[in-house]
Length: 214
Ligand SMILES: [Zn+2]
Image (cartoon, rainbow, N blue to C red; front, side):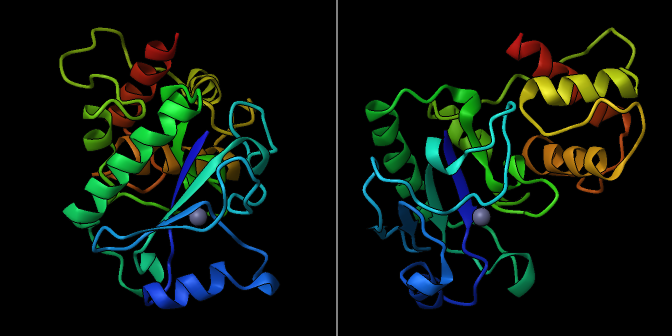
């Protein structure tokens, strides 16, 4: 898996200090500054501690099966802002290289909030997933065009979210974990609306993603 994060700290220096501090017990393979500068912190074949308690497609040892990239951005706590073009271009190039070295399927290129919807918001709704997908990185189905079927109900939504990869109990109820999974889905695939509410467009996009995955 390739997991994308934002640093969520006021400055790049602060983030770098934390990522290099053994006491903090956090690390990532790469850090990309807003000016496009890339710092390698951990060798790709080594484990970095970036995901924490997380899950994707039923797998929970995410750190042992992923490369983590931190993007410098203050995050939702300190003034969340767009990821500059130079930073995105650097990510593009770095990710392309990683994908040539490791067999990562498109649906395994995801955000921290995708694998930890109850705890994390990064890289967040301002992250441009379609841009990456246009460069052949990650999964972005075609959401344009009509879908004739009627929007799926809650049980179907839960099984679709789980099929895509999200931790989502098949409870038939709008419990905390389900709302968190819906919100994480929105941050990634429907960034115009991030409220955890299952409106028709969110339902439609979940169905399209699940279908695209097959
Ligand atoms: Zn993160």
